Image (tube, rainbow, N blue to C red; front, side, top):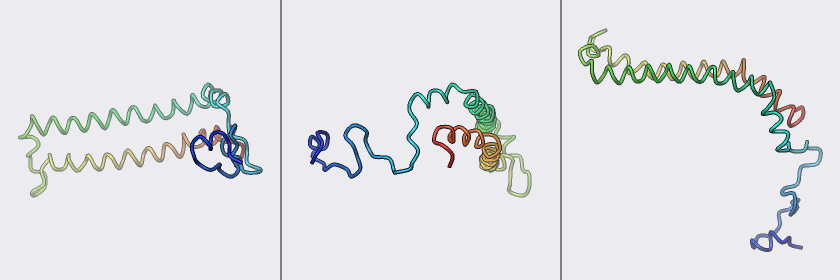
Length: 135
């Protein structure tokens, strides 16, 4: 038997689906969180701590990287004499600062992973477990 929605779309009904509820849950699987539960978590103190911890890392790191990047671009444009200062053989200050952009990216990535593992993931796991049940 076809459901009104599957008949209208010309597609056969999906096994285990219901026209009212969408795909069926696996037997024994915890129920999906409701929008109200998501809103309650979003208003919780733990979620506020998670958001605050993320922002306290991301915003300063973004600002630091952008300052370093724009300093490099501006010095390259307006301080050619400084940037062409030899440092070691054919390596000049401008080339070293350019390479340092890549190193800064790797450093920030490593710092973020460390920050997330220590500060963000435990809170996020706790919130997820509250919504979905223990894994």
